[in-house]
Length: 334
Ligand code: ADP
Image 1 (cartoon, rainbow, N blue to C red):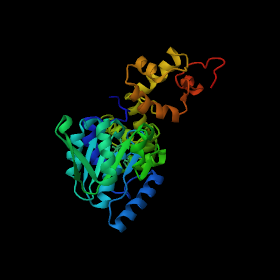
Image 2: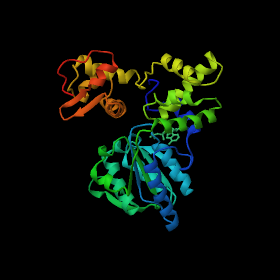
Image 3: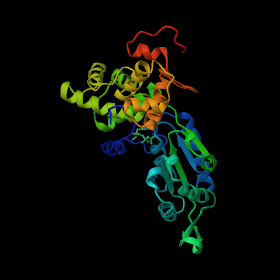
Image 4: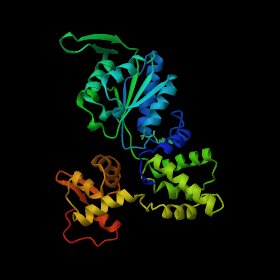
């Protein structure tokens, strides 16, 4: 796991729970999703009924899990957490659903990776608050309908397009999370620095924010690395020169690209002559899973204007050559 990867490791999860916002008011940025969600929750509270099922989509580290927990705390209910890959058999899901109390929130991270039989069970649960539990095997098998308490499903996915149509259609509200602006990331950093008890000035937070790939999780991670540096090599305060020196030490470049991003870009530009090349081929070239390249590296490379997704494959832009310090070839078609 590299320093700027937006996936959380185990140690990360522990630190993250300390830095999580606990209410919509504390949640920085995402004005569109936050305002819409506020209305959904307020409406539900007035009606005294659980709100519609919520789907949150967007790249990792943008606050989907945080929002799911906030939904629970705003409604005053508990949140049960699981993930698509963790639900191996539909029986596991049926057990989880039947254990929910009225109004509980069930959060399923990476919901697009749920196994098909479990997904089908989820349809009925979401629509009718009922599941069919199959008892026995072969011709003697019977389906026993089981009532479950009205609940709210919050699903998270890196891309809404990865969900099957029937599952997507059962969500009453879909929130599309966007990358954060530098200003919003500075607010996240100020709040986190406060919680960590480290001093940071405006230029210091701007320096970290601008290299955080629009992602609060990365901002918080870089903050902790810069804090180490500030405490060991400086006077403990995070200023611009301290942030610069620390980030250079950790291999985070001015755009916030980490080693894997740069490897992907380098392979695309040098090995494949700028493309077009398929994402699977590109992933093999850097020794990564295609879904990591596609869901973690690419969204930001596209946003930074370094890579384009075309029907024929991935293509490097002029800026990609420039960023790697290479001469732009003649007759480049992008
Ligand atoms: P996701 O579920 O989308 O991968 P998380 O909700 O786990 O993202 O967010 C990762 C971390 O980033 C959180 O622990 C929190 O510290 C921070 N974070 C995310 N969004 C915000 C936000 N809007 N305001 C403050 N901190 C945030």
